[in-house]
Each structure stands twice: as structure tokens, then as C-alpha cells.
Image 1: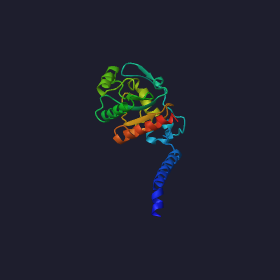
Image 2 (image 1 turned 90 degrees about the horizontal axis):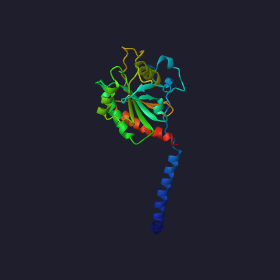
Image 3 (image 1 turned 90 degrees about the vertical axis):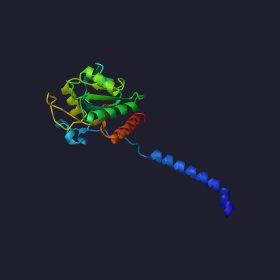
Image 4 (image 1 turned 45 degrees about the horizontal axis):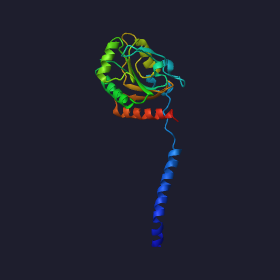
Length: 224
């Protein structure tokens, strides 16, 4: 009996290894592919959603915009056509969360440098202060790469309406007037169809890691 097992030992080991490999590939093939949700206003914390959008259940996309970046160039959705991008809201004189957010956005920039499908977009919430020269100075200071990351300024009401009605990123109400001020830590992941695919705390290391993982998931979904 011992001689019998010794004779077929190698065969048994090889057969076991092959069986494990086959089972793994079958499991991997049958495993549901992870996909990101497409966020609609009715899926988001109502505190973050403008009253006019609370009941919207489908077809929500980022509205058209026309703003100016750190180089004085006009930036519109055409510049993000066919791109995945991460958006946020900041101001250059912010002493609290913005420096952390900008540092984390710069880390994301480093991760997507060689990826032509992904860009970044940061909106100033104090456009009256953040002029083009000021944005350029800030961009140089923070290592912004123009081809990947636009810091934009422009009409305050347009920017605030984008934050509240398009990106669903702000809890406070307001009309974009001179005394209206928004301050949000949210990073928003937007797909090539201008739909929201994720919200992340831009001050959290764990959330930034999750965003990077979700970027891979979203990008891979276009190659399926």
C-alpha cells in the first residue's frame, strides 16, 4: 500500500495544484464585477441637495460651465469631454482644510500623470480674491501640472450653483451673493458621461485611497 501511494504521490500533488488553479479561475470568472453607483440627487444626503432636486431619480449630470483657469484660459466641459475627473472646491487663502485637500489632490495628480483619461478640476469659492495671477502663483506653489489640473475662477453665482445643484457637495443654502460662503471637504468623482460616481472626504487619507481604487474601477469599466 505504501509503495502504491509513493508511486502516485507526484501525480496527486500535480492534480491537486491544477484543481486549485481551475477552481480559482472559475471563481474569478463568476465573481460579480465591482461597479460604482451612478449617484442621483435622491440617493444623496438631502442636506447636500438643493430643494429643487430632491425628487430627481435619474439623468442627473454636471451642468455646462465656463470658467477661467490659472493660465487665463477659458475652461468649459469641452475640455473634459471624454474624461474622468475629480472635482473639488477651495480657496487660496483658506488656512484650515484647503491645504490638506490640495496636498491630497496633488497626490492624486501624481497617480494619474500618465493617464490621459483622468483630470482634476478645482473651483475657487472666493473668485473675487482668487484672480488668475493669484491662482497661477498658488498652482506653482502647489506643483499643479497644467495639463492635468485646472484651478478655476469666474462668476461666483455660477460656481456656487455648480457646487449646490450639479456636484451636490454643499450643505448650506445661498444664492452666490457677496455674503454667501461655502466650505466643503468633498471630492467628487465624475465619469465620462458627466455623472457623479463617488463622494470622498478630501481631508481623509483613507478616503483618498478609496478614491484611487474607485478611479481604477471606473476606468476599467470603460475597457470592458
